Amino acid sequence: MKALLNPEPSAFTSISSISTAKPRNLTHSHTQAFLKLPANNGHLSNGRRLALTTRATLDSVRIDQSGISETDIRNPTVSSSYRSSKLPKPNQTVLDAQARVCTGPTQTRPLGEDQAFKVLDTIYRSVKGELIDEEPVSKSQLGAFFAAMAIRANAFPEGTQWSEGESRAMNQFWPLLVRALPADVVFIADPEGSLMGTGSSIGPQFVGNGTREMRLVGVLREVLAGGHLGFEEVQGVLRDVLPLKSMEDGTSTGVSEALLSALLIGQRMNRETDRELKAYCLAFDDELGATPIADVKSLTHYGEPYDGNTRFFRSTLFVAAVRSCYAESSLLHGVEWMPPKGGVTEEQMLQFMGANTSLNPLQAKILLEDDKIGFAYISQREARPSLYSLVKLREHIKKRPPLATTEKVQQFVKARGKEAIVTGFYHEGYEEPLLMLMKRRGVNSGLVVKGEEGALSMTTRLRSVNSSKGIPVNYCSGFRSLSMVSACEVDGVSRESFSLEVNARDYGFEPTDTPRTDRSVSKNIELGLTALRGNRGPAYDRIVLNAGMVDHLLGCDGAEDIYVALDRAREAIDSGKALKRLLDYIKISNEVR
Image 1 (cartoon, rainbow, N blue to C red):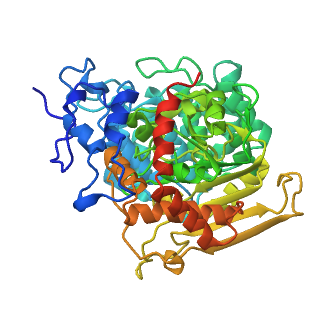
Image 2: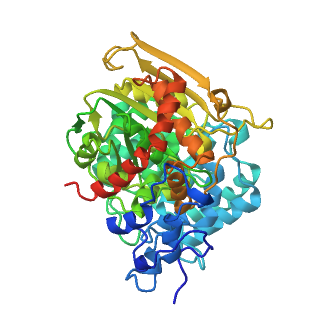
Image 3: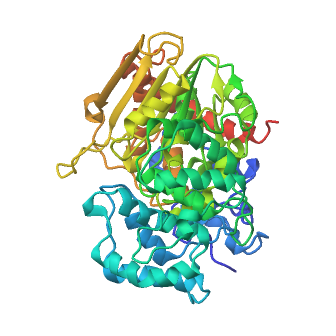
């Protein structure tokens, strides 16, 4: 008998009747079995903890008779297990180097001589087919690494250009590499034939294969020199090359993955302009046709980072259930798994609880309009298949591409009433571009939050006296329109801007450390369900704070007074309404057609 998926001892009741259920595809009846809670006025009697929870389910799930291979098991205690086994893994030696060099003009950390020699030797042996006991270096990795090296040499300040060790390694290996590397990678590494001691005519003469690659090569020459592109140039290239069609062995049937990787990492390293970000944001709005319009009075689009949380409780799913109780509809979107973090996502939680995570925008519209639900989740896989086709490539370029910013500002469904967008950010300097994209979307209100891990959840913990300089956690910036006319139509006329640092203590919350989940999907679900059951504590406080504060900052009806907004969020939980909404969502999402 094989081990349980969750080997940890549990204080929760086991449910032996679902011992062969697939952890990623629980049926509604199984879900109700472990989510249905006894009614006791919102509190657990005699100090009992939740009797039936996700942890209980995990304790009883066995895989020996499940009929699925172990490589396809989704272990809800480890978010990284949701990575598809069909994705080829990148070479770790080169990936570690990419983590240092594939970043911005001030963040790049040049390689030391030993690491530079090791990386180039790994690349050379991989290209020659002589690499043993390591994953081969993929075309995407070659494109990203050599694009970073070219941009650093061409455009970065002296402190982040090539180190002496990197220069010595390149001087020694380039005569070998130029004969071994494919032409597209040689072009990326030395587009003008002038960076290496022994120049090559390949870069200056390279034009690509076919019309799609020719346009890509043309814009790459500008990017590799540290330059920027126009709105139409970026949109044209993206529409030319996506969706990226990859074979089972990881090779591409279309455009060169090396060239596309070089573009994505190159534009991020050069720090994208507003017009470049707008192009990434809007390029595939019409991919599935016209955007459905939901008949709701208010709709908030939640743009959590797609790569999830690896350390702390992720509250947005539970916040959406709370806000739906007083007619503030929410549309969540994301993916099952995304690099570089590969953390806990809403899709993983909903999938494990038994909800349908393959809804299209029209089906999500139905759930938003349903009086018993009022929120929905859409996977990028269903709404933007062209962008979803880049998951494997995004793992191999290591660093976040421009899409990591722009995919958070999407409208997969629109509303007849007010609309708002809320996103999280981490790196200083991206808050204004995010708000710019929201205004470009024409929503009535927009909010960016410096949450923990770059997510959009505000915390109740105290700011550390030893915290680093820069924008603090719980910093919020945004705008709200003062009329029903969209912000785009009244540009600059009736829009109110604001920025503040939210101190939860000012609103009556006791300071507490944020609950840790450490990549555990089941732990995140357990914390959220316990809070929705009415158990007071850090998770409960975070759900209340984020529901009430978002309502207040976005200018939602009835939330003008922050204390009233917080109280109605508490009432939605303590009455049991929010939990019922979540349970109804799990059931009805599987019935919608």
